[in-house]
Length: 129
Image (cartoon, rainbow, N blue to C red):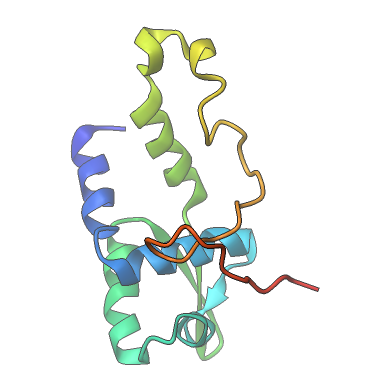
């Protein structure tokens, strides 16, 4: 990955709404969600969401596929992996084995329980049945 591409990705994710959308779609995995499901999950007005989805698609963070009247959005997981690789390629002076104990090296590990912003208290999160 080139620096310009990494910068484009970071600029696109600099909006709280876009970051929430991306994280939601990463959690969904390859199945993705249609725009209405994203809007409902994040409580974002559809017109506002449309603007963000277009920008994220333009930055290649999302892929979109037409399904009848709906559009299904998916996180570009390959781009995410490429970005992580770009950020860590020179980790520990080129000795990635030294970084093995850093958080995030576990791949697709279950997310840690969410905490309320600034309080350190754990929030209750819904679990899938």
